[in-house]
Length: 290
Image 1: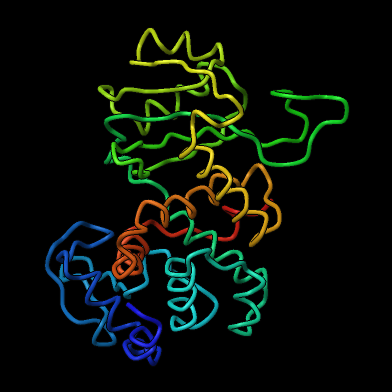
Image 2: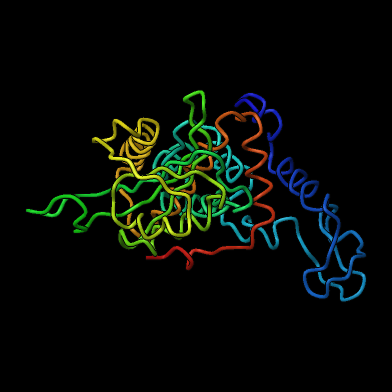
């Protein structure tokens, strides 16, 4: 959906309400209070009222649009810009573009990032590279894997035979231990995958459960695709958002890899995001407060 098509399709707030109604009720009606499956029209045409308990449900109830403090049209615009723009948009940019407070844009963007989290339904298969990296400043007088104020991230990337990148996932970890790195493998990598890693000792322990081959990194030369992916993430994070706390780093990983894994389906990425927004449980500012 191009920007022009988006603006033509969602021209008014009512256009957004009608779209959410069509999307939400297309799966059939189930009362959120008593699970009854029959209803009648609510106070307005797009709402539903349960015929058994009388519970009235709007199109935004039970979704990530629940109780937002600004119009749906602007919320749709945020979803579109974050999902379709190649590098996404910062809350400051959204604030200037939509005449909303920066904190308001940031809080709603965090909801969008939660909708962008992996469904964990499609594990990485075939040849998979795994590596860790850090984001943040360096600790004075320390090198390598010394933590300091660095944020540690582990990434898994499918390596295609034609030299192209496949899908990828990233996860924040507390340290470089086998237990922490193994969380990513268990969540996102198929048990049959052929995993290639660098020479870090933690992978020796993981090799007892996974098909792991270790190879010296040579400063990234032997892991060219992975090196490019990591550099792209760092450039995106520092260039668009400048910085991110440890608490919210996973949310920004969700956003980056949601777009990365759908880079070949730009025309449908917004529609995929809206489907997730409507099926995700409500979140409020208290969930993101520092």
